[in-house]
Image (tube, rainbow, N blue to C red):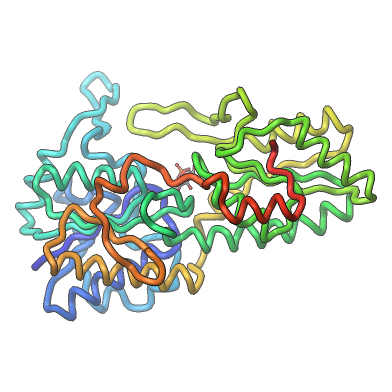
Length: 361
Ligand code: F6P
């Protein structure tokens, strides 16, 4: 048995731990493992380094390392592959047949595809084309359906909470309002969990369109109580009721749209309405970096070994998921195309409201 591993989409702390667990679990069974470099790039070229043989020696000491030793890309959809044309333009082409040929030519028997909703959707389409696929859910945004948690989320929340702790001291010293933009395109998990842990006064998430007047009322009310600083946390996908998400870049050929700018917009609106001095901050890719937390390492290692058990069971077209206390499997069809949003009646939102945190509504 020769298993290929791919890491696609944005990186997340814990990817290397999954890779190590797949390699070691496969090795225990006497199977070989190869890593595909940069998503599926490595299958499209015969250049050295495209496919990376992985054994126990290659994955030694990587559990605690952020990033992915295989590299990744969010422009690597084989069904919409950006190809340079003779006239210099770039056009998306369906190159999945080429990928299938390459997969077979390299005598690969199974693919462990580690990715978020987009990459798992691609994995499912590859499965339908005949590639034996097992998915592993990854994203710091925690928005993959069917799994209680994705690895990388806990680390991102820790990083964001740490940042909020630091912002607090300077905000309080200067009597300022800080608006901190956190990742979370369509789901507000990071903003909600870190906002609550980091004692934010306002938390804006995509699931609850906000009213800027409510946000300002909270800040003014704090001011009246002598709390002359405030911390507003906004997921990048937060938007005003009746308004749009703020985009930094529209979708272009081979690339997803880029969100960003909500903190600045909310900050300007607060300054205008309250007269408070406001600073905004985008935490950005810091949330994707660093060493995975213990929780993420364990989850990643459990996912990797469970993926190899799925291969052994011949359960292809499936995805490993965390269903506490166990790691189990679901068909990819149950998971893809339906982002896991924060339920409006979730305990965490109820806790935030009970503590007097303004959710923007
Ligand atoms: O991994 C998901 C995510 O963190 C989103 O929250 C964010 O919008 C996106 O990645 C940014 O990705 P990049 O800048 O790498 O395209």
